[in-house]
Image (cartoon, rainbow, N blue to C red; front, side, top):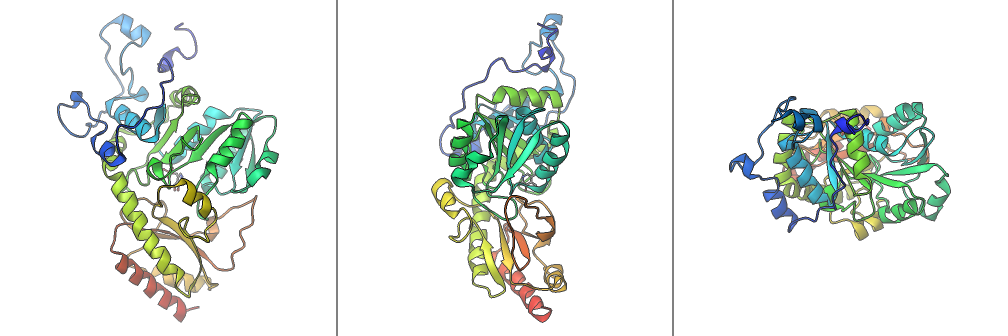
Length: 405
Ligand SMILES: Cc1ncc(COP(=O)(O)O)c(C=O)c1O
């Protein structure tokens, strides 16, 4: 037994049943992840460490202890993993050092050499780099499909298709996908459904209930909530949990103790922050729609936004990230608008307390669908500033644009 390749991974003995959340989300977020072993302190402390001491030789040889080595877990990691599993209705959760690391671990747990993945054309850019680079190098074939393929989705499958990777809404262009419909077809073909659910978190979209087997979250965004940590979270249903945890143990790409601790703090206020950021974003989206400088607002809660019908049917709200397509303008005019903003910062990532704007056309790669907008596209993330102040900052930007078209 000890000579089998898996013996030293110290894997959990069996896939647990999905955890049913105890009570409404707000109460759960506030009271989850507590343990008597924390001596009454309301948040789990930071556990650092590699070595864990065993009581006896027999315990060491058989890995008989709740925690056996720092890389295989510690009490604060376990607290966040269990709380997330319960929030997401999953059998188990892994934590990684970044959102991208969680995506990589999840994809490597599903696909291998000689197999085929279907990936939505609207995925976060680095996922495309991973698919076209590392995965193809290891013999995994990848086909991109348009985000809303309808029944023609069946035509994309091959004999060796083992996984379908979704991201809803799509990165930058904000298309909501028909997750239950796509999952149904994928399951008919025996493929695993993976999804990046970062925009919603389990609070706004119940990915596992919609048929997602492995749901991924860049905890760097809303879970952290303060732009001061990097974290990846992936949760799985009972069928895919054994593969996910095994791949995670083999790769060893875990999250750091400080970031886990900070994420547990973010967990407490996640519902309040995501809903408030979403409320402010929707108000700004409506305001932007009325501005002559704007061609289109790509916000899932607005009727003209792609996939709005699926959002209305499946989602419990909208978070604070959306995009706008401006009327055609010179590069210099756009730079003048953005460089002079005083509240909106310019930079990557989102989900923190501060509003951000990013011009996105230079980052946009689409190979299965057309993206032919005549004007530049901006991605906006709305934080917790006063909405009127944010409108004023943008209105002053539009004035600079008018003076420098
Ligand atoms: C939708 C989405 N998924 C995943 C990630 C990756 O997260 P991280 O930066 O923690 O690797 C990002 C980061 O911007 C993202 O926007």
